Length: 456
Ligand SMILES: *[C@@H]1O[C@H](CO)[C@@H](O)[C@H](O)[C@H]1NC(C)=O
Ligand SMILES: *[C@@H]1O[C@H](CO)[C@@H](O)[C@H](O)[C@H]1NC(C)=O
Image 1 (cartoon, rainbow, N blue to C red):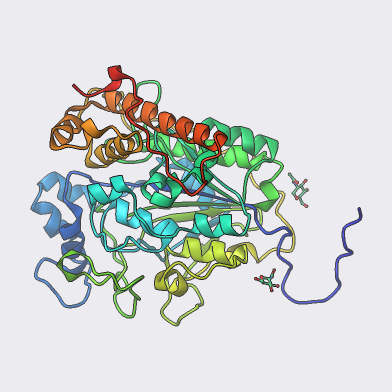
Image 2: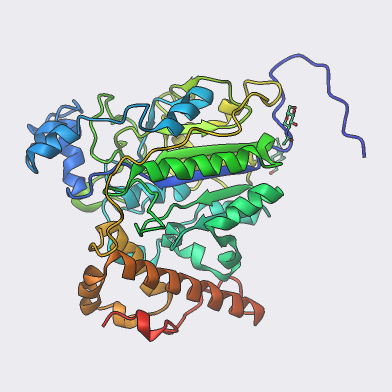
């Protein structure tokens, strides 16, 4: 069948048709100093330790000095373009955002929740039990699904998107895949409307973590981005794709740009502990976007709307998905209704570029030590273990003795435990689907996990 003749009218160049079909979001990488309790810190960093009424961005060193002198010098440092050659190349070749903020001045998990649901439902810190039970809010995945659009989550060990309770429903069980499947889908042109890529959170020898959490080698994060880019670049879907790379929060590093604090709408009116109203944003994070529809060397500043004071922040992702896919569902919260959308970044060219590099530079290790598989878990890794234990109904793990056990697990043990639990859950969900169980159910797995993986 012939495609419709191109129209000869002047005006803005047409959007590619169909609209970009693959947003590949890598929202799980961050440069973070995990050893400090972040919630209080961000406040001191932003307002200064003498408690100014408006942000001064003057407290980073003071705050770090309360931990150690080393940390005080670390928070003022950054990476040179030479040590992160993949980002340096992508930023030159495509678009970098210079005013993209984390959604709240807090740590990883609440910021990550904003990415697909435009709220953390009152969480300003890592609320272990809420995470394990699953957050109840609607997500952009539900909105896509309701309109018959497909999405996939590609993960290593465990997908953090399962921290949303809805994502555990049978109807989504077939959306979860091993990371390697992403490479197959990209090669075969089978990428869905939305693809989420989750990095590896556990550092093993031969299988290094690539999520940029300290003490993991940032070079491995660079290698992951390189692999994702190259797979997409040689995919038959390259011309319809937009890759979004961002960080959930700033990891404690210094920034001079004042975090927006006036007129930021609370997502849903839920206040956090100590009365935090979700009425200001967190510190800026790096955000890079890649598409053949992006002009070389683009720097994206403030959004043009929808409100005068709108900003780019994590809720910009669901807001833009809603807009670009013309979703019937309304906004998820007041926050995505307010945040800037970035569809404009792929609307400046009349046709896709043909000069985008096929390969990105090689990456040299930045860390000169190997993975320490026997180190204890970080707070974040313990949350992933809790998630896994809830998924498989491992009630022995849902107790305070479990809490101790989770702490006692090594990285290697946790990786095995989590892998086994997540796949038990997905397999049991698959069986339930085949048995005709209602698709809105969440499967209750009663400890099918191999005893060998139990914590003693
Ligand atoms: C992408 O578009 C360019 C320009 O029209 C074309 O030369 C190229 O073959 C297309 N690539 C794919 C994978 O369709
Ligand atoms: C968006 O969807 C509405 C119906 O929900 C439809 O009326 C409208 O034409 C669509 N717009 C585009 C650009 O597809």
